[in-house]
Amino acid sequence: MHYLIITTGSCGNCYVFFSGTDTLIIDDGITYSKLSRSLSEHDIPISSIRALFLTHLHPDHSKGAGVLQRKLGIPVYISELSRERNGSILMRQKIEMESLRTYTFGEMVDIPGFSVSAFPTSHDSDGSAGYVIESAGRTFFLMTDTGVIPKEAWELACGADVKFIESNYDDDMLEEGRYPEFLKKRINGVYGHLSNREAVDFAKRTARHGESVYFVHLSANNNAPSIVRELAEREIPSGIFCHVCERGGLSEGFIE
Ligand SMILES: [Zn+2]
Ligand SMILES: [Zn+2]
Image 1: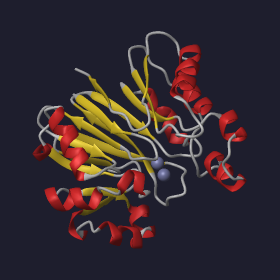
Image 2: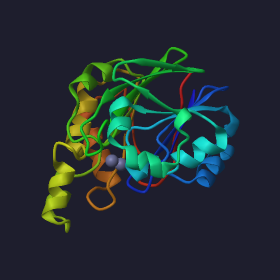
Image 3: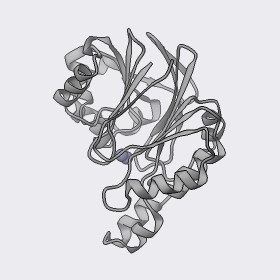
Image 4: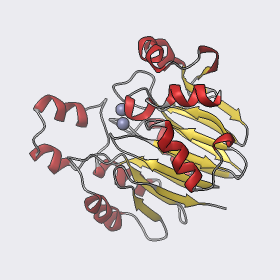
């Protein structure tokens, strides 16, 4: 399995999982040209994309969904709750309605090469989700844009070989920064984002020897990769590969 984080952060999010024949995309907050260029640079055929799953409908996770869906005719999956509550956003996305699929949390969805299940996250976008992805005996765990760690996540993360965990802000930088009070409250509130402290603590408590952890969705204004890196090095036991994804940059990995 070859996987890419094409970009992550408020500037756009897109995760790619390529089994060798089939590709699954999670979130598409980038342009079609950026996606197709990144895939071709990594020898992943765009025609191998079987489905797009969205964590939620904020533009940094979904703004490319409509174009990608229409160009390739692929299905787009969101939670049933997300579909129910976000009618006008979905209309604007121009996803063909017959290609829009829904799931319930905990349900296993099979697409060629992958089985995907979702758990609810706590974010200011109704029906937001995190994912567990299984392919060829490997398990990936993805949790982003959540104000608190959902109770389901603890057990789900323990079985994963590769984890993607939001590490959005440093408590002190947010507190002392220039953001207005209401925005600070949104970010560190129950429906906002995870702090470095919460992310690293979660990674530490669900750690399994030999696994890989990617810290994603770092804030441009309230965080710095070096802070996350230092915290992870201090807290997370050896034998776990930790990588901090720079905002806007590309990261990749392989797992047999
Ligand atoms: Zn986001
Ligand atoms: Zn969001």
